[in-house]
Image (tube, rainbow over all chains, first blue to last red; front, side, top):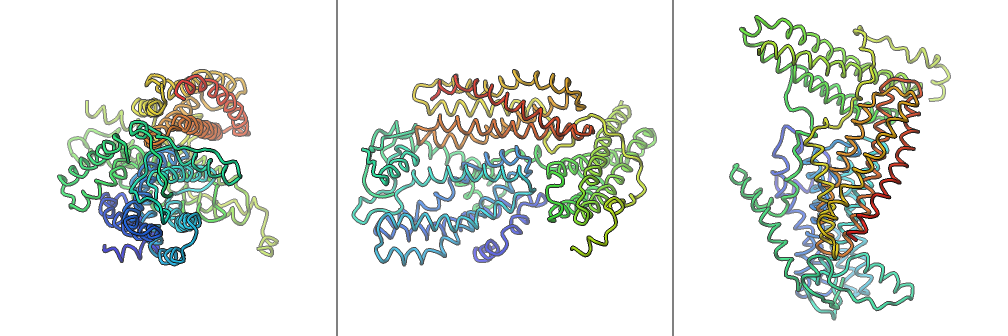
Length: 246
Length: 190
Length: 204
């Protein structure tokens, strides 16, 4: 299946596609579809990342294009075993390969929509909006086009009732948690026009302490927030704080 | 990035991916699939499907059981049928019936040997009873669907519950018959 | 819909659909309910225990001075301790209230819930691992996720026990079991929290 046919099927009826390729009679369905789905994630995410990086321009465009697909992929790769176990605990019976395929198909759908929404973001960025607004536009677009991708996974899960809702809520919470932290780790995507260009920032603090400091600052309670190396990686890498972007 | 450990973490991730990819390559998968495994191997390394999925062996009634339960699920997906029976319960009954049917398939293969068939009367009786019980269970499923349809008109869910209990009892009886077949098989083998 | 309802006969006659010629269904015994979970076995229980211990051990790696042993303790002790301390009380209350399901079936439900929580813990290892590698909040996150998984396990267990009692066939038994199960879940939750405190503080 070529990428255009696959994109059409993903946009029109992803559930039928998932059902076809996750059928137990078709045990290699996930493996066969995975390269094409990953290519779509890379392509769509890369285009959107490049547009986001174009706010700073130069090398940052390339860096953001290279990192953005991983922002989409990491949460799914990390959370999939937990989501499968949560579904099983809530008696929502779904095979691991089917869930993996649904996750990947949802990501690919999101990536296609991200690529499609890139011109809008480019237009907004081209009028030199404020840095914080630029970040807000990126996050808002990501949230908006993430919904159809998420609905793909939701529609794949069988059953109904309270337990299914609990499984969905738990899974969604985990994905959001990991996506927020992945975004923090892979920053900067949108860099300040005068800021330093960097591929990745040092591993320091976490998204929640950053958000906390931002909220406090917005309330007028400024604190001298100095990010320090955190986690096993950050502690072994020493301390580092840079100005640049989010 | 200023961190000494990160490259090692990434290297370990890629090494595992390379292992998964190489194993796929050896089993004849195309290079693109093996390369995709390098990045997204956690999607391919899940728990064994056999533990969670439906029984793998097939018996003579498998297609009918799957069709009957697919129809039942469709009825339960209607607005009046939602939340009447937990999906897990439906899945459990389907799995038990398929397991019993797979057992019948196994016995059939055993009985196809004329030498065994000649001296396996208890096994044949147990097989016939199990097949009868599966047929009865499938008819119960049809009745259950009718009752689910009637809920839309009358709103009383008690008959549905009693049908489910009756079906559950049949399924349970089938499990007991499985052990009968087991002992008959053991006697023949001895 | 309104006119149709007005002309309908009484619900009882409407629902009296003559069944096809079936052999009489076997009497419902107080046997195990038909559930979707795979059967309990040593391998499943072991996998669950490994999941809990593994989650604790991974979280301990993120603590500044926590030892691996305290991580294993934090993963295993609260759930196992809660089960050992509260299961007998549940069984005694169940028998005292003259409920019909067999104690073995309730133990099976408890075991299934233990395995489910263990599987969730095993699935959470990569998530906590990511936070261990990149943040200092992993032990705290472990605590939150562990408590959430425990609460989920308790909730599922109560629902399973209620279903077991309903399938055992007594009138009103399901409601009684649900009430008993909720009381037990509160007790188990409190005991679980108490057992969590020490090991969690050790890795924080």
